[in-house]
Amino acid sequence: MFAGRGEIATFAKLMNARRHTLLSRWLFAIIFPALFHPAQSFAQEYDIDVLTRIFADSTVLSATEVSLVTCEPFDRVYSLYGHTGLHISSPEAGIDLLANWGIFDMQQRFFILHFTLGLTDYRMDIEDWGWFCYRYEHYGCGIYEQVLNLSLAEKRRLIDSVLENYKPENRYYRYNYFFDNCTTRVRDIVETAVGGEVNYPAREGRSFRQLIHDWNDTHLWARWGNDFLLGIPADRKATSREAQFLPFNLSGDFEGAVVGGKKLVKTSRWVVAPMYDKGTNSFADEYLLSPAGAAIGYLVLLVLIYAIEVRYRVRLWLFDALVLLATGVPGLLLFVLIFSQHPAVSLNAQILIFNPLALVFLPFILRKLLRGEGCRLLTALAVMAGAGIVCGMTLQHFSEGTLTLALFLIMTYLRRTGATRTNETQQTT
Image (cartoon, rainbow, N blue to C red; front, side, top):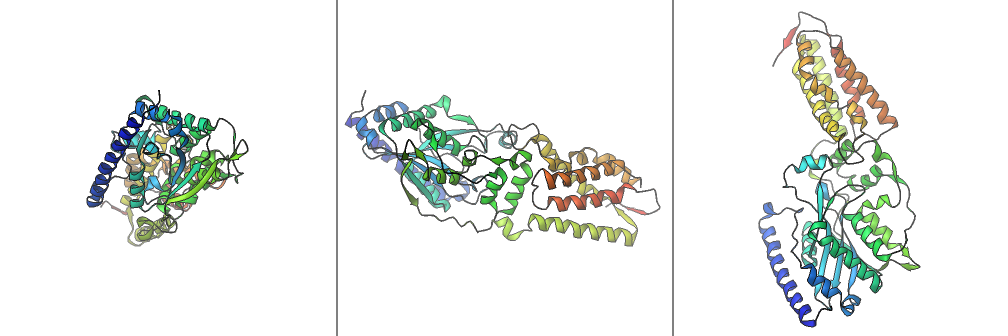
């Protein structure tokens, strides 16, 4: 039943061999950075039966420490909010592992479509702790570790849960950004292990959108993309527990949490010193227009087009086609999201502004404009955009610049709705 010292020693040698292999992979990633994908799994396969026998030894288990690990963000869209894992360390057995519920594969077939529809499966893996630290230090991210104050029985329940999750048939789970992600999975396992109600410190009520704005406020285009995709449900105030979907929110709550009269966290420290500079702008925000600036740029272009049409008595229908295309294609994405399993994207009032009907009826509208005829569909698009502005001021926080863009779109649509057959030259190039 109990692991012998020989078995523990053999396992420790195996761990050391794996560390050498992983270190060589790390060096390869630095030499050939184009082949290094930060989202891929570098986990090795561990024998569940061996781990179970080792942790069945009470001497090994009593010397084992389990820690909540919180990683700083780095400059990738999927990593702007940090990461969470569980560190399991047993010097007695030569074990130093990281349980990670945040593994996904962007190379899998139809990944973008599956992610959009809320059909993405993440998986749990176990990887070498030393390699994990190497990797995040290479990204320029600090790692904060909080050693949990667990009894022997609580450690056993927690490690049993981790190993149960590690079974091949249990590794995959349906990812949900707000309610079931790599952070909430760790929290749930810890709460189950302690077997009682965890009393967390009180937290100010804020919406899901406001909570993620804390982490993308210097990445304006990433923030715009999030606000574009997240609908009305994201403006609901999150409960204190729901707010723990963000890694550093959970870390802060664990720091002040109490279970049965004892603190949940025993000690805390930075394993890798903090390096993340939250004030640093991304490349796109540093060198490209902000979303609001892009909306104002559209106004300048609209005024210029209108001046050319009046001055030279032409109708630049190609500009109208581009406007309808540029609003209809994003609208088509919002239409697809209506059928998504993500709970916060299916009801999005921005579809009234980025309207898929502009794309659907694009040939019909252009045919009308080329004939110099008025088009009631443009009137309908203008009315819906106006309704979108009302929703953006009352029901939903829109992405930056969207309300301004909506006003300019209404101007664009209305200047064509009363078109009549004239002898003006039609611009066709």
